[in-house]
Figure (tube, rainbow, N blue to C red):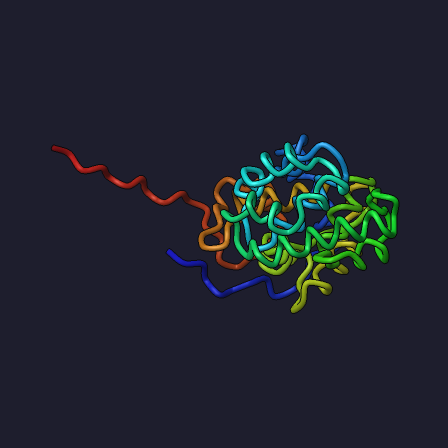
Length: 232
């Protein structure tokens, strides 16, 4: 079954948005990034590598990469080919290896090997766009940012939480509607909700804790029947 084209026809109120996010928080209070990292540098590299790749595939690739090159100096030393050797299993690996190599040199030349905490400096690094900067600022430095990936973009439009035709419109809508003290962790609540419940092809509304406030018109409130297994 494919997802119906319908989306919410209007945006949630701020009160409904707060209730929606609160429900996700209560259902998954300890939500955090599924990327495996030990410091801001490893987080930055992991997020750059995660474009068009799953967190699971990135974690598998970075395990050996971070063992060999745990900091910008050692990663710049192994160079583009050394980085590529570890990440060939993920999408766009050639371009990503080039960007990560360049990013490491930029960190050394501009920031003394440290990951900067401000948006302008982050977005000036190779392979780093607004979404990646938002993730690093949020997770590594505790900033109240909202990184909009495909899951959050879908939820924003499907539920009415923050409708928008562009990623930036959805981001701005979320920042405007989600209470400030909930904004930082909401990034994780929404991503994981989209990944495991409010799925792209078939949202599992029957197990959504926030369905009361969701404005999606085609909710699926009953689980599909289990497939019968063939018998001998």
